Length: 389
Image (cartoon, rainbow, N blue to C red; front, top):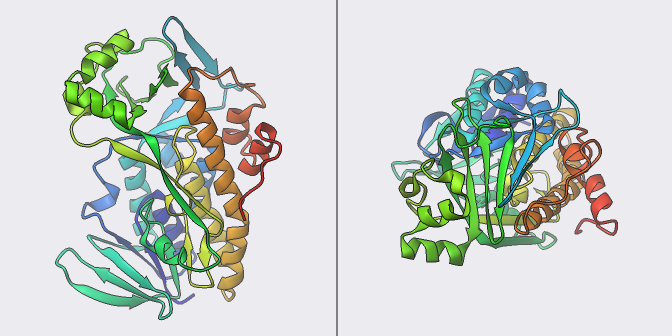
């Protein structure tokens, strides 16, 4: 591999770049955002599990990231009349709530320290696979072509690299937007006074709120609701009143005007039967397998993608075709299984608090703490499940 170009400087792209640069490879990352160090304006919290942290440990930055997050020891479901705490089974088990920008910045800075060159304000207009040429444009509308021995699409749900790979006759791609949308919601300190260091979930039938703890005692999360209901609430100008009526403890603890500014964000799933093109291009993270985020696995599977791909590329430096094909064979079933598990959890939240999971060997424990393969876990839920091929 003479030169690797990664499109997208999110957590997965930067982790992959840093791992490859550590081994002495030449890595350049192009990021369309103009902000430095991963800031994209979103302040949503992510849940880092041992699966994702293991990938960061492989890079030597797991401890640094743990110190930036808040340890969560279980989940609290707040129904209309009662609240139920579901602790994780072992005292040392925890996930970490971490601001997306904080995580992105930490991995970005580490990648640069390993020798990765990250250029901001650069958009990938096209990947011309026959020539192995990227068409790039900077913030000043300057357009140029650039070649690479390997191109990695880490450019999210709207990936341009994926669009090229999906044109191959044998590649299946399904992209679907859910009927629901989401809005960020920040809950001031004091909104909960028990089990503060836990994921808090308020299911309310057609909609729900999921929030994670911050160091200052506040909670940061998302309101998820049908797009039609969001429009109805917006037109009535009563968003704050509707939410506070359904969840009285929220009254006075959030800024409805700030929460409802702008357009609600879509919830998109992406499903593919292969993540690579011959020996020249490959996808990681949301570019390969965007999913509903309500099992908390999106960032974890993305970081795992980056770590596994780095291991394969370094193990087979003269046979990229084999490394990429093996990566797809491993990761496609995992991406599809993780998406299906996430969808099942999403559907359960829309129907109220799901039944209490076996705290030691249930889905949450196996996915997060035992780090079992997603494809193995889903077969316990849906015995007839098999990946799309």
